Image (cartoon, rainbow, N blue to C red; front, top):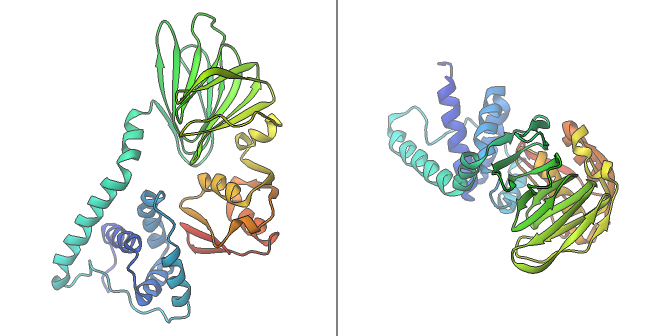
Length: 325
């Protein structure tokens, strides 16, 4: 048999991602996918690259149900729309064209983020950036910021992820961080701002910060060291809370610490460090709040332990889809 080229494997991986995202895979195709992923390390690596582009897709719960049913099926030789036989080439062209269209539709926001960002960080470790004014920014994994400094102000836009800002004092130029419709302003302080699906969280470790929302005119909320606030993207500041700054910024040391957090919220935070999706099967409100320390670089083990303490199992459907049930 002719050895597969890198292009062959990459095309097959893209075709599988498109088919998986369609929600129309048959049980036999799902069994084929599992067999293909396990056939060679290059297959899993190529699928990882392709699947990473689909991280923001809606949870594939229906697909997971079919995959469970297909687990008992005997793997068969894979037949892809891009198989070498010429009669499949027309279908291959259509599949790849569909993939291009879907990728453009789904990931246009991500492309825009990369174009707008001045500093980005991937998923391997934190990154420290020293800005032109001497302020330091520690970027969490999968984080992007845009910087706009003028003679009158210092403006940072948090485009994705979470960052810690250690601000060099300059009374003539306020230091503002914009995220999810809110502005966090400081003169000389250290504070972290992180995005989430519901809005953003601001945590102060030194000095004072004033948080205001464009959608909710009024006096800014003043935060001191050891205080934080969450606010929604659609407006509305939450209640001020106190916290341990070291725990809130444990991500700098590759850790995530939960103290009585709802499981769904904990999984949403952990998904920041996962290459794909982490889904909670069923009603997560029935599960008690979770506490624990998760090592980001051993996320699979942490998820398994977190699930086991609540009578659940962490099932890795693919390297890019883990389900707790």
